Length: 424
Image 1 (cartoon, rainbow, N blue to C red):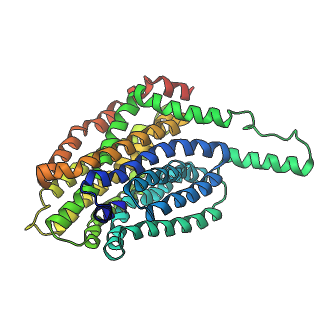
Image 2 (spheres, one colour; image 1 turned 30 degrees about the vertical axis):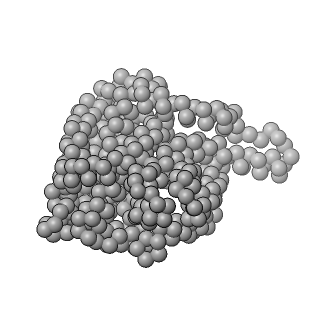
Image 3 (cartoon, rainbow, N blue to C red; image 1 turned 90 degrees about the vertical axis):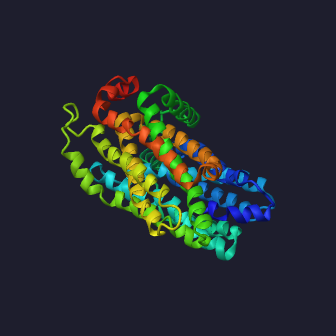
């Protein structure tokens, strides 16, 4: 929603540079990357519900000064901390879904959950465009604050789901009821909170630079996510500047991406059947993690198709429906990549899945925070056609990554010391 009010921020604070205002997007994503790692670690120490309640409260408190800000510095700093506390849902929510679903329906449940997280960046500009057009940029933050209040109420209705936290609560209750301190559970003698936090901060970074699977998948998913966030720069240029649309109508242009993403989620049962037909791993008796990569391969082709389509239909006199329809293959490809690349990382590293996904989040949000800063300059210099073509060509160059892992992923996994350690 923030990007919809960029012009309002520039006018109110007398800022001429788009880059300075877009730093608000960058600081928010940097905070999201850091917070997702730290808060997911804390949820493993104190339980998910407590972390959710505290995080949503602090998130709301950080949105308030943005809505009342007197200068751009306050906006940038508070959005960093808002992103930090918002990272609790990005990192811990998949764990909550996993806590309450069995293996057979887990992929479907996570796909339904991802419908919200992946379409959030799509719904944001749609809502933000109309809010900014009729109420101004400050009301964008008031709307977010109202939604935060609703989230806070909902968090009270969500029970604790994390098994170690539930067992520790049960132990404390028995100790209080009986006065016998000998009651204990198998999680009482695990690492301390500080040790868990230290491990969860160091291991993702170590895996990011030492594990071939993490190196290439972090690069691929990071670039794909960064290009998605560059759309927040490209769409206002194409629909507001080149086509003369109002901010509200320009926000509706994201419906193409949102629809494509929804389709990617809705066909999960079909993809699951295809995965189940894959030759089984002789050790586990189940399809290997590489079985899910075929969906990523399809997505890797659809994304640049959508990007090329959008780039060369961006300007009038081409009808406005053409660039919007380009969002269908683009959103569909992004949905497949994010869902099934995550499944592949989690399926490959098993006990170290959280660390592999944390490292992926750091790279993903880091690149997504940096690249949009160059978006306006790139589109001004190259034009919508060649800027979009350059992004599409970058994605084409990276297409071999999922195909190579689909064919040779098993051999690569077997050469990973961390994966072999997890299997043993």
